[in-house]
Image 1 (tube, rainbow, N blue to C red):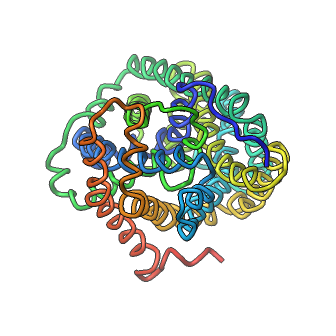
Image 2: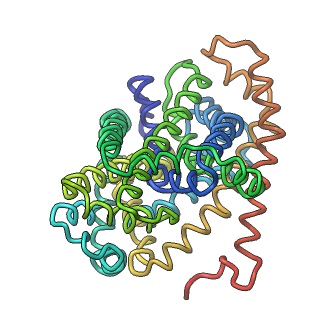
Length: 445
């Protein structure tokens, strides 16, 4: 087994963790769901959920990772709880599963960077998306995106992931900020700000039961929880830096990027009179893409926009590949580049159905978000809060300069409110998967 790497700097760890969290979902899902569920009133609920529920959960993963200094499966055995390795295995499998189709979407982004230069999608964005989102071209670009991810991970923690994310994350913020300034200058943009930021407390009260579970789920999913990424990244920390301080920084930066994306996307759509009541692929690859054809300098703006989407996609994807590579190099005497190439190849093959048919991509995504992610987060929380307990507080408090009361508050928050929120999210997911006339668990055969 090769000697384990570490982050060169604390900033490197924070930016890598933020890069893992700031993915495609922050660019499209967060702005549209915020608008759908009452604008600023939803933002308030989300921020409360991110701090009150997401932060305790991310700290649980940090504690396990740094204490063990091993991958997401072996960490549980090193801590003395061999039987809990199944929790780590679920997280590893979840990251593996998600990356297989996430890479396909990354390939779409590559296609749209080229399409922005030529203006290929301007006239008929829906038809263009239908043509390029599945088939042999999508498969080829899935391979290109996966190769980029493999190349970064193969270079290692300090020379690959840390250097890449130190460039990527600031670039995301700077480019989104520039696009937000540009969107502000467009006629009609003010309606987008009103739609995104004006509180609609009637919508909040009428849809409270739907909004709260989604806000909790968004907090988990946008922070890359349950995928093994945060345990793996924390395992490379060398020293007693404040996990509490790092966690708060990551939560705030991740939320800031989501809000910044909303200040770009919604004004763009309203300036062109495009209905924002959509989400997922339709938001970025049809609605937003269609807006570029009618604004000044649309080709350049489209190129810049999809470039930042690509950076966000890559920063998340490398964390998911690192989860499985970390496990492999901790347990087998094979070099990092060999493992990155081999495992990246397997993930590529798993993503082939999603590249050939978007119905398969939707099925993979539904299974991940409705079952695998909340199940993994639940297992990690139960272990850290109820099984590991007091040693988890000791690890969390190292380097924090905070009193033991903060650790106890974290522990009991994780033991109660956070676990209840995850159980509720999982229950809703299971209802979607197994109940109803067309259970989502059935694959599109």
